[in-house]
Length: 158
Image (cartoon, rainbow, N blue to C red):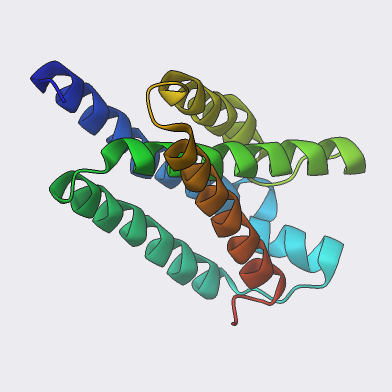
């Protein structure tokens, strides 16, 4: 990879933990909190402390993933994976809001930041990677969304 491409890829990777913090802030502070929304709409008892703890783990995993991906030379794969994760999360917030005809905490950042970031990332790397590698990263991103949803709906317990 050329030096300018490496710098661009590195900068793009760091958009994910930064926007994750924005998304979590909205989910925690706006609209009564995502944990309260889940309690009201799904009967899920996810405490604010557990919500922050789990999201802290998620953010730490992204940061660790960035360092590992750069060290082991798979930053584009990680970009596609994270693009699928954030696009999926933004899409989930949007569809949920449309179906319920109400705001849910995380909708604004999901719709205005994560959907465009995820879509732009996936678009940018389409055709730049071998298709099998690209789709494996998308599949892992989708799987991460499924695991996060299952954890969330089980009050953050495995």
